[in-house]
Image 1: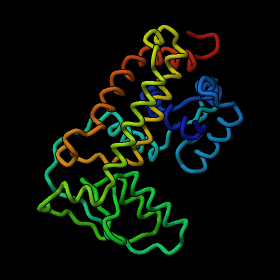
Image 2 (image 1 turned 135 degrees about the horizontal axis):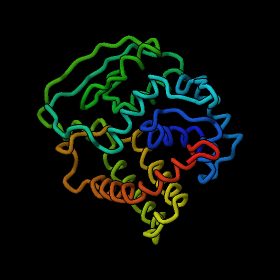
Image 3 (image 1 turned 90 degrees about the horizontal axis):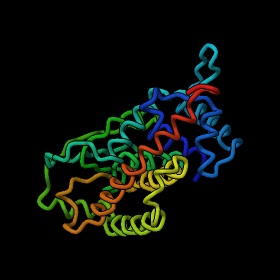
Image 4 (image 1 turned 120 degrees about the vertical axis):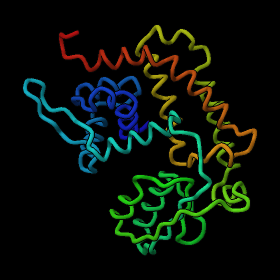
Amino acid sequence: MQARSALFDLYGDHLRSRGGRAPVSALVRLLAPLGIAAPAVRQAVSRMVRQGWLTPVGQPRAGTRYALTDRAVRRLDDAAVRIYRTRAAGWDGRWHLLVTSPVRARTARERLEAGLRFLGYARLAGTTWIAPRPSGEVEGLLAAAGVHSDSFLAGEPTDPKALARRAWDLDALGAAYRDWLADARTLLDGTQDAERDDETAYALRSRLVHEWRKFLFTDPGLPRSLLPDDWPGDEAAAYFDTHAARLHPAATRFVDACLAPPGGT
């Protein structure tokens, strides 16, 4: 687990609901159970400030805290909707199509493509991208990349399932869910009493969420009607929900203890 990714997990899963800010000392304590050393935490915080995800905020008698920027809040809120699947499951049958201008520089092109995939888009052909619904972040992503685009809402095709399979490799995604479930069961096997140890529960839950969060980069959140009847993601999601909830109370106590001021309660 890299420090920067762990910080995104930490802010999204715990700190966002606690005001979205914390001092470096608390961040160091919170990432230590994950095997991340203090220098790596400080370096990751500095990098996230440079990239516009965090901003230093000075508070009287409390020292500098690092707070989420508005951009980071939007990203983490959208990620939480996808991680915990709180968005309404309905779909009106329309697709969001983007036709972008070409990006010549390879590094910029790869960065843009990774960003579009994170937002749930897949390349349909050439510079044409498709998603089951518009993303609120896509305009900002394209503007930051200096890319012009034409945007359309397209009606349902004759065979929407075939279109989904054409745009996304659902066989590979299904296999990834099966692999995740096997690994998660190995991680949590015999940990039914882990919630009695707050730090252990926090570390286990953090790793569970960290690995689940990776599906943000590969799963576009297709409507259930477009997926196979025996979709492996259903069983994986149920397992994640059950054990994330089971470990949450003890993990919350550990986070609160780490955020408490020295000598405080």
